[in-house]
Image (tube, rainbow, N blue to C red):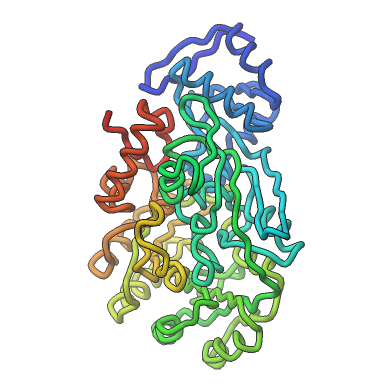
Amino acid sequence: MTDLSIATANGTPAILEETLVYAFAAGLRGPLLRPADDGYDAARRVWNGMIDRRPALIARCAGAGDVIAAVRFAREHELLVAVRGGGHNVAGNAVCDGGLMIDLSAMNGVRVDPGRRTARAEAGATWGEFDRETQAFGLATTGGQISTTGIAGLTLGGGWGHLARRHGLASDNLISADVVTAEGELLIASESEHADLFWAIRGGGGNFGVVTSLEYRLHELGPVYAGLLAYPLETARDILRLYRDLTSGAPDELASDIVLITLPDGTPVIGILACYDGPSAAGERLLSPLRRSSPLLMDSLQPMPYTAAQKLIDGFYPKGLQNYWKSSFIAVITDEVIDVMVRHCANRPGPMCHGLIEHQLGGEVSRIGRDATAFAHRDVEYSFMAIGQCADPADAPSCIRWAREFWDAMQPHSIAGVYVNYLGPETEEGSERVRAAYGQEKYHRLVAAKNKYDPKNLFRLNQNIKPSV
C-alpha cells in the first residue's frame, strides 16, 4: 500500500498514511478495496448507469462491527462518506467520488420467526431475497415492486408496494432497527428505545446513521392474482379513463400502475400492472373490465406466488441503464392529466422513456396517524413519474430533457410534495424539494433529530436534512 489521497467531508483532499489504511483494513472482517483491487469496479457500480463515481476506499462490510469501524474511521479523519445498501436509488447516493463507501451489500441475511410473524433482515438484503425467505412460511410484508431493490433504502424513505394499501408502508411495518450513529455507537431504535430516532428513520432516509438490520411485522399471504395487461398506445385515453374508474373505488387488496411505454419487441403500448392480494376469484371479477377492453395485446393476469408478482417488471428496470426520474403526486386522474400523459408519451425520444402513474397509496396507508412517522403523504393516492431511460449515454441528454418537460407540464395538475425515494440528486432537485417531501412541521422535527444524532452531517450523501447546530 502507498499513502492515499482521499476526499474529506468539506470537499478538500487529504492524505491518509499507508499505516492508517493498513490498520483500518486489518480491523475489518470484510475486504477494504482500493481502485487497483480486484472487485473494485463491480463494487462501485450501482443500479443507475448514469452514476460513474470512484471512491478512494470501499469497505465491504461483513457485519455491524465492520460498519462501526468504518464510521469511526470516517469520523476521525473527517472523510466524505457514502452508504450502500441495495444501490438501487436513482440519485446514486450510495457511491461517492474520492471518499469512503460503506458497502452493506454482503450483509443480506434474513431470519424469519413464523410464530411471532416477524423477520429480522440485514440492511444489504434485496426484496427478492427477503420475500423468498418470508414466503417459505406463507408470510410477507410491504416491499418494493422490483425485486432487486434494497430493503433498507426503500423502507427508510417510507416504502410502498403491492401490499401497502392493505398493510401500510414498509416503514409502517418496521418494528425496530439497529442504527450505527455518527458517534460510531450502535443503537436499537424502536417505539420503546430511542423513539425519536425510530420516528425519524421511518421516512427520513439515511440521514441519522447507518441502519445495519431491520425487524419487520409480517402478514399471512398466499398466492396473489396478478399480471400485466397491454393495449395499443392509440387507445391510451380510453384505457386511462377505465383505469381511473377502477382505481377511484378500488378495495385495499388492489394495487396497480399504469404506464405508457414500448415493449421489448418494439410495440408502443399502454400497460397496466395489477396485483390483488385477496381471493383470486374476487380479483378476477374486479379486473374483468380491463380484460374485456379491446384490442388487448397482452394479458398475463393469473394466480401466482407473491414472489413472482414481485418480479413482473424487473425486466423493464435492469441494472446499468441510464435513468433520470422526475416525480410528483396527483390527487385525481383528471382529463387534463390524461391529456398531458398522452401528449408527451406520444413524442418520446426513445422507446425506454415512459410515463407512469402508481396507485399504491390510500387504503391502510391513509388510516395510520399523520404524525406516526416522518412519511408525510398519507392523504394522496397517486404518484406520477416521468422516466427518461435509455441504454446509450449519448441518448441521455434528450431523455433528460423530455422527462423535465413532461414533469413541468404535469405540475399544474399536481399537488404539493414528493416521494423522497424518487428524488434525484440535490444538485438537480434543490434543497426545497427535500423540504417538500416532508412539509414544514415534520422537516423541523427531522432537523431536531439530525442535530442530536448527526450534528456534523457525516451522513450527507442522501436526500439531506441539514443540521442547524
